Length: 319
Image (cartoon, rainbow, N blue to C red):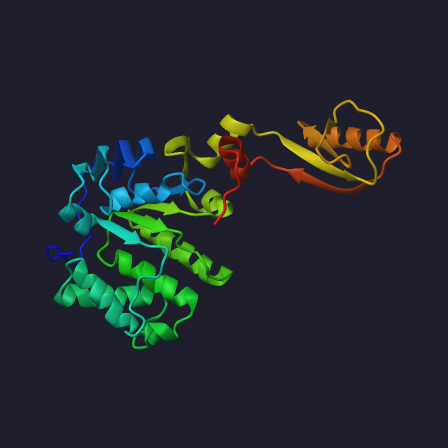
């Protein structure tokens, strides 16, 4: 990739422009339509989690934005301008799921190579490399070869290589895949720092808890279409409702139906809708005991993103 020289000063962004606009994007591979009119808008400083079952179109959409795939029709705008090669080089960062580093080279050498690809030169490049090594907490390992790094360390350098040029939109494909909880937490902190600096983040993930706690908005794709777009609390309320329910594990099946208690596919389970938790749970426990059953276990289920996902797609999210 050839790019014009860039400084270490953050690029200027038109105040009214969205960071990323995707309108009616279609992409077909032979007889299979991977994207069927996908539209979404991302603002500066926003964290968006892109979810969907395998084959939903997530990877194709990321490839369209990054320039690796050309849409059949539709429009993609970056910072209010039609997406082009030079605009991508200046303002778009891509962090792939597969570690894209040179294992025989040092961390510093890897960062310098990627910085040059993004147009950084001279003092600007040196300053950004020093910043990156400090940002990922690996300044003391700068001259060690990448092949000596742990998986979490490689993942952090991989992230730094994609954002050296201070892009205003960052595409992250499974940014915490295969790392331990400590490394995952550090990567979260790094992403929050990018967001605080004004970057918009698009993150694909198979971890629903990650999407729920680490994004401002969620977009769910299924069969090439957007089936949900919004903040998690809004989606939960609109799609599955906000009421909790309790699942009682009984020592034996209930002998007959009881008011306020729903049946389950497991005859030794009973489901109790909870509007008033203290009242409804007390009444259910009393009714179960009066029916001659004993409660062996109890758990309260709170509607969440997982429930929304399953309701919309009918499938578990799998690697």
